Length: 136
Image: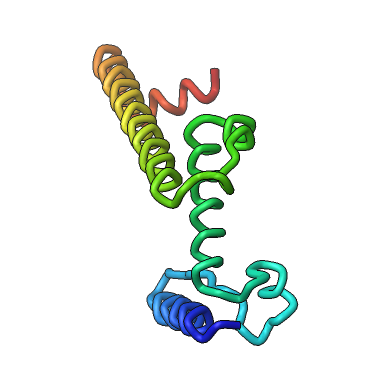
């Protein structure tokens, strides 16, 4: 395994260990470089460049799957795309995800406003209205 990849893995493991020392925090870490069976399958060439490319393709797949669908993500041939094309796909899908999150927040705020108005109109507090709605 290339030294650059070993250094990258060990840096990530150190970051995860430090982050996990904080109260209520946890961060997963990559398998140790000594786990040759794992790394031989994950990165056959053992180079940092190959690892980063694999990660970029996976990031593109999962981002597109989240933004659109898994079947749409599977329809892409990421191996034929350049790094710049992959990054553009990731950025585009990330914008879709961000817009969806914002839309959901707006809908939630509108729903809360409606429920607060209903509670006010009938002269009860919000927890009472929520309790009545759950019981209905």
